[in-house]
Image 1 (cartoon, rainbow, N blue to C red):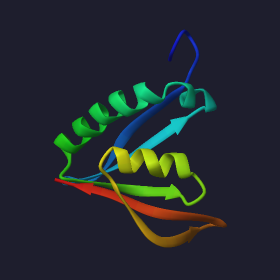
Image 2 (cartoon, rainbow, N blue to C red):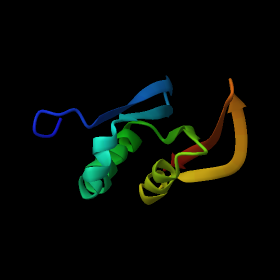
Image 3 (cartoon, one colour):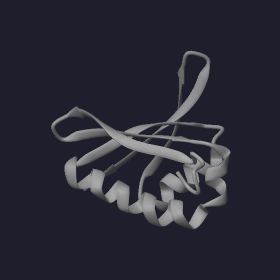
Length: 96
């Protein structure tokens, strides 16, 4: 929440004692807060990484902004495309 308006939220879902799946849900307003996303998001991802030695999930191949952000946060985004339902995704991961 910024000035009473929802911008986004994210967290991590444990899938194994050593692995978590980070997730993010954001509104278009989040793009007005780029610096905050870089800094606060990096802190949150680092906290997730402190809990899990491996983080990974999928991102839409069409969400170029999210892919760039994931890479800035230290994730590797794979090149292979996987189809889930009718949607195309790429895997991303980060390990310590």
